[in-house]
Image (cartoon, rainbow, N blue to C red; front, side, top):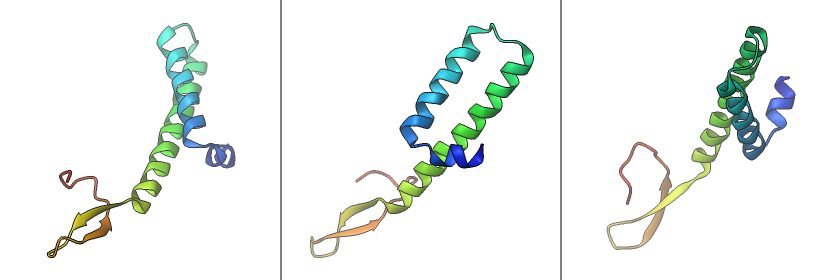
Length: 82
C-alpha cells in the first residue's frame, strides 16, 4: 500500500481523504471498517503533508534587498507575509 500511496498526486490523495471523511461521518460502518478507513486516512494525511513539505522547499519568495532589487529567499511558512 505504501507504493500506491506514494504514487498518488496531492489532488488524488485529497479526494480519497474527503471520501473517507464522508464515509466516517455517516457513522454506519462497523468497527473494523471504521478503523481501516481511519488508518488509511492517516496515511493519506501524512502523504499530503509530505507533498506540501516538498513544495515548500521549492517555493521561494522575492524580497527587496538594500538597493531595491528583488532577490529570491527560501520560503518560510513561519515568517510574516511580505
